[in-house]
Length: 634
Image (tube, rainbow, N blue to C red; front, side):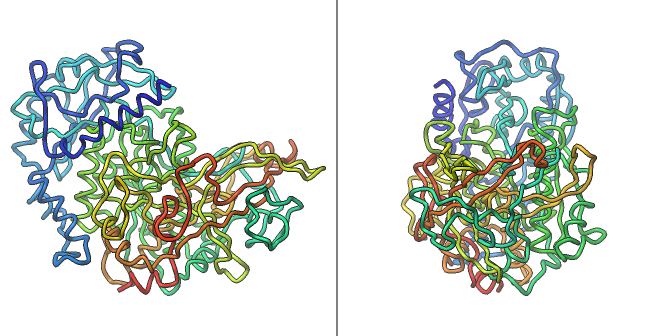
């Protein structure tokens, strides 16, 4: 119950986000309090102890944009096809000249930090933040508050006991801070392997495995209530994993390869074998391998290098990079890919995003991670929203996976969206269950929501064990309903999630290849993977094709998408199921196997969601339809 109360309090406090963006600050103590820099979970009820005063902390103090209201209006205008300013994007240099904090603003904040005994490390070209570091004791003295450890969501996390205080002379410049409190620990990748040993520890899918939808039938009957499909008469076995040719065929995509386009991928950590893996995978799929200079890995400046933290699952993130790179390359094999990793620390994802945007490293950015719920202090959210606004002004489209836990009610007891997918300045991508037939056309597609049934191989009886997962979606309590959703006809109380969707269900996922560690050695192998972590890079790759066809970047595309819903396949409810077999040890049959049924279009554990005609909170406007490139490729 404590966790639920803290989440609810965070959401309630965050309703003031709009007023904070306008620059409101309250006086407290000897300085001016920076509103929204104390997390709601940093309460006396959750207090564990004082933080170690000698621990060194790296953080970023963010400065807001000059003429912030004008910047927000311009971001909307250049993204709106009805506006005379549509696609009149600014270069990074033009953006900095009009909206970035001035050098004198930065100097004033740097002087205060140094005077406080803190070390200043880095300032990006857009002056959006000042990266600095110091001990807990130094930060407490500088910001006029104590730093403590608090119990929250099963973790002991650091946070200030009150809002950070800064001198009145710079209070109007500071919009938030990242790294002083540990809200970044809530981030997670949105990918699902769905087995007992996720990569890079070896993982394989157990046969029977179909090459295409319903090629092989299991002996198990469909569960009650999931009998919409009558052919085959019993539940089909899962596919081995779809290929790019199958996915593009189902979505009616052909004729372009992404040449001349660049997609950035932001994740944590990096896979040391990524280029060899993607090239082996490409060869196996009949795709061109990545040429010299087509793929690059970048470490953003302004990050804090610390020893690898195993709690943050660096191996799992390497699987995420593999999925993202191979999904983008599979959709747009001639496009350039820039991978920007946040090494050794979740807290650096914001710096990675700012680096991509301010250096304009790509025109499309896909992000397959998010924060469960909107449990974040406004002082953490606001700076990244400002970066998203800069991206829109520069013609950069930001795509985020919508999440893999449905409406989150199974975890937190009430429905809520995930952030940053709930930002009105990003395209939120939901997930579907997709059946692709032998001719590479769509046999069925419905919303991704799954329950699991354990099957007896002797009696063939299958017993429901519970709801597993599904595409994230719902209504934000942080952000109001944007004009592009109002114009479409939505009447939700806030920003509705997701906007669009693509294949996400791990039962019908993408076949990827990665170097993994098996009992008999370390080598390349392939397995099926899903999650909205798959949906987002699929859409990023397809938008690279649309940019190529149009001869210009689409930038922030939500207003365009909602103005042309007919370009999307309207995903409807199809309640059915598939059978799957798992290796009990995740690798081979030496420890036995287990059979399961997995349902489609099942929201029994996410009751606020549904799939239906028009926009819905699982698939948004839908998935790419037959007219997708014809509509957006001009």
